[in-house]
Length: 212
Ligand code: ADP
Ligand code: MG
Ligand code: MG
Image (tube, rainbow, N blue to C red; front, side, top):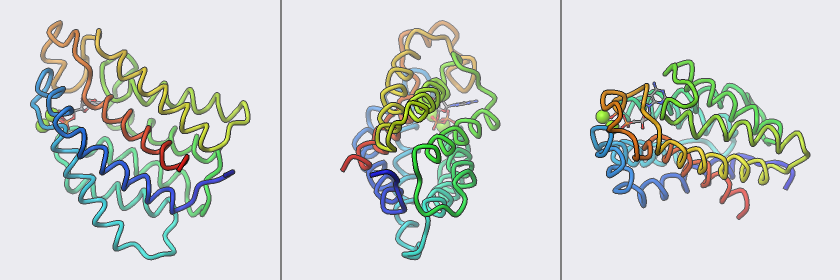
């Protein structure tokens, strides 16, 4: 359709929790290679907790309310780098969409942009630093271009997810300049950044539930 509402937002978080549970070991494995091996555990725990909190939201909750409860849950239940970073992303997305009941393509672009900007504000990573920003920034750029070309909300999310996947893959040859992987120097080369991978999974889930 021309817009996505709270049903989509709830379905996105449900699908994200599912895909993160399925990818728990894969994300742990990536983080074991260039970090401390907890990223899959952190994300799985955080999104399971967020799922529980969604049940407590009233039926009248807006997409922004859904993002807000995810933000506060991730901040309070996920430790390490990813909890505050993803928490800030969802908080900024929540503020960006305000009380809108339905998100059109332009609103989705605003939300994605605010999420990315929140991660940058919090973590100070630049593109090419081998972080989740290397998934988010191409996703925002692709979503912006798609919306400008008249794409539907679903098509905007598809463009974002496709770009995020390519961005996550493109972290493999990089040396890390932020986070734990930055301690490894050249030894990080050849390994995909776990946060970029989880970001790509989240954006793919957003697209898949918009299509459904
Ligand atoms: P920790 O490193 O504390 O164990 P996680 O393993 O859950 O936390 O998350 C690691 C991910 O966080 C990295 O793969 C990277 O994508 C992301 N990350 C770490 N530091 C930053 C930063 N400063 N800016 C953006 N993303 C970051
Ligand atoms: Mg870790
Ligand atoms: Mg850790």
